[in-house]
Amino acid sequence: MIYVLLTVFLGAKGIYAQSQLEKEFTKQEENIGTLGLINRKLKDFVNSLMTDEDTLLVYAREQGYASPRERFVRIVGLGVNQQNITDPGTVVIAAEPQYTPNWIFTVIAFCAGLTIFIPAVIFDLLNLWHER
Image (cartoon, rainbow, N blue to C red; front, top):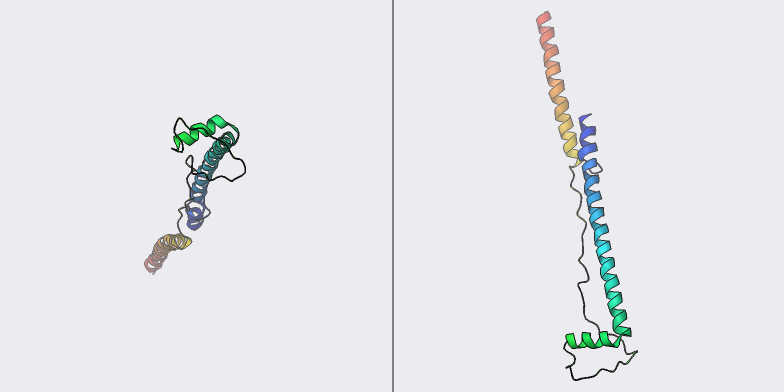
């Protein structure tokens, strides 16, 4: 009974490990949502660079490619050599759930059984000794 209770609450597939996995799942879902937002922002930015000349002009000047007196001519189809514009997100590594190994539960249950069994045997032996 002790082994079963310990395994259900603290074991590898127990309630405590399950709650840890649910927290990690929530953290991963939040990270996926954040990466989706970053992805949409990057797609919008690339789209505006490819279609809007004013955006291209401002971005090129921010990057130091041109002075205010220079004009830009866009040549389409040569490929894009783009640096990171924004943070591409962070890698979130799922943590392993913390649990107690089953052999510890076995030892605890065995010791608990001995603490019940040994006094019972001693009590029975004392009763037999008093009856004689």
